[in-house]
Image (tube, rainbow, N blue to C red):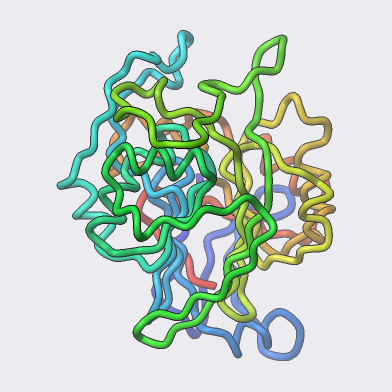
Amino acid sequence: MTTTHDSTPSLRRRGLLKGTGAAAIATAAGGGGLAAAQAASPTVRLRWLGTNAWELSTDTATVLIDPWVSRFPTGAYTPEGADPETEIEVHRDVVDEHLPKADTILVTHGHWDHIADVPYVAEKTGATVLGTETHLNLLRAMDAPAEQLSQVVGGELYRFTNEAGAEYTVEVFKSSHSTRGEHKQIQFGGTLPGRAPKRPKRIKDLVEGGSLTYLVDFGGVSFFNLGSASFHEHEIEGIRPTVLFLQPGGGHSPDFVERLLAATGYPPYVVASHWDDFDEPLTEPAEIGADWRPLRDRVAAASPDTEFIVIDHLESHEF
């Protein structure tokens, strides 16, 4: 595995897996096109917090995607799979250590490994939280501040401006969760419309509740994130992100990787997401739960000019 850590914004050094997968070091050249657009936009630091938990930050703004860092063990990558009776835990000391601030929190779906820490993160940061009706009802049931919750369904385009004057936009797209098994079922599927349910106690209580994808644009540098290995092709066709997050999976979706790359215009960068065994500690190097290497090879075959980036736990990369 190649990790990337960027501490020199002027050079934008990258530890990359490109084309055939050989490690390479690249620098952002001057001139027109992508390099010029990046030079005119704020530097955005991307930090991986395991699973699909990502922090996008500039000097004045922080956006979190699926910020789950408690990582209580469920057996997710054992042959038996996650134990649905596993009790939900929120490790506030871990959240405090790794998630000190946020302006906006984006929820892709309602499973425990995406949403369980969100109520506490929202409470401590005052961030606006975007999610479906089910996601927000689950969050209310877990004592998230109701006034900070913003219900979306897909199709919204919002501009955010914080007290520091930072501006960025978030576009929301309706999506689907990946399926598994002979009958193509979503793990812990279902919705919870209407009033908030009783407080969820076990991971089976945190249902998928609809899935969303997000395009976050800081003005020239944009990030498109899927919380699962599925998407609605006609919803996103024509978007052109700088960075596309991809995760292993999508076996029930024909040509998942190839169609997604085409729909997003073969982005300059693909970042591997949601591949680690999240029963293991965040403070240790990531252990493979779902192998990212076949994903790398498919990206290289379908889009040879796309740079495939693997970031380790708590490491950062600048765009």
